[in-house]
Length: 499
Image 1 (cartoon, one colour):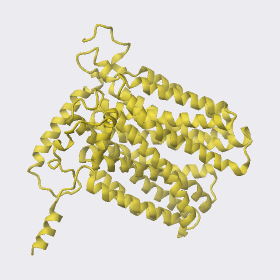
Image 2: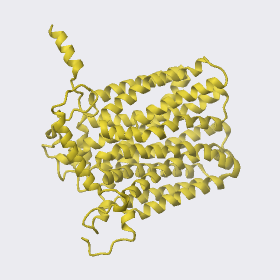
Image 3: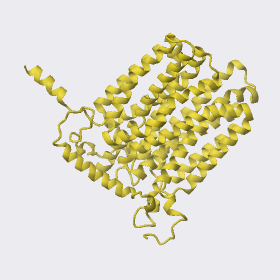
Image 4: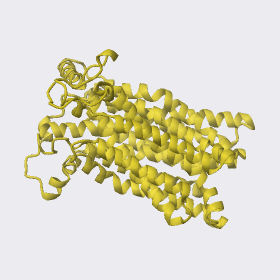
């Protein structure tokens, strides 16, 4: 034992890897769940509690949603900057929950538009904190080699909250009123608070033990040992790859990237010294990686914004029936997400990004078929559900590459420039920017989708987003995971041109 103080109660399981992952997952789940739980209630709240005229309700709802997204965008980078300069990530992680608790109380009892706007802003701030600091804690805990499958599994889990919340919120409000909706919210917040309070970070637990305290009884190894073993295994695979034939242009080229390209050879200016993560933006890999987060969020928002209206116009569905259509979209995400995350860890980010966004091109285009009324009645509904499920597969595949790619680039900068980013590294700042790009996508996606649907129709709207997915796949091929290898195809082309 390296500390003279007695260790905290139940230190081993409170600092256990699975418990830390579960705590972050519950935090992200709570954020999305409470966001979705309240959204279907807002129109009724504005109408019955605040007596807003019917023709102004849609405008107020849109503005309240925009307030949430704007607060998330503005708060993400400062949250990361603060987290990288504190001794523990737990304190700011708890502060995010305090903001969410205050927002929920204000939504439950607020009786004026300004109070509701402040509540939505606090929800946005909380979202920025939990996503930024939560992902940084995950990286601290599992290391970069396991990041893909862990993030994929977490995203699959929190998709349950995104799926359940709107339907549950509508049912609870209809059956029990405000008390049922906010009673469930209070219960979820209580569980989240308890887990965040009990959590002990690995670096804090390491002060009390000679080794980082994973629980030996659950068969888990120490994260530091896992990281070192993974790094050694990566080097061995890199040596073996020197003699391998380069036949797959989608697999990352481990030889081509010189670590010297990540070194900072000049004295950073004051702005970079204050925000050292900015130096990493000279890498096109990081820029494209964050771009993936923007496009991913835009596609998610596309479905959120257009499925209810399209279901109503095509099939005459009620809000509850339209909400159930999201099951077809989210179940593939839930099932395939962990597998897709494992594939990112095993085969690299390039393969997943190119295949995922490339796959989305045809299935997005096919979403125009129900509008063409090739089938009638229930068969057309089944066709729409099947196409949504196919799109859910693509959304699952693109869930992890952005976070993993950005983390890998910044890790290389951190490794090449010891001390530049401080003792905690730049990872919370990175995830702040990732959250910023993601929230920007959530803001832009519905606006563009709504304008296109009204202007050129649902089918052509999806065609535009299919083109965006195709461009993203091409950029992923060129930049994600490094430049593509020149494989057999390129060699054959060179031979033909030589002849």
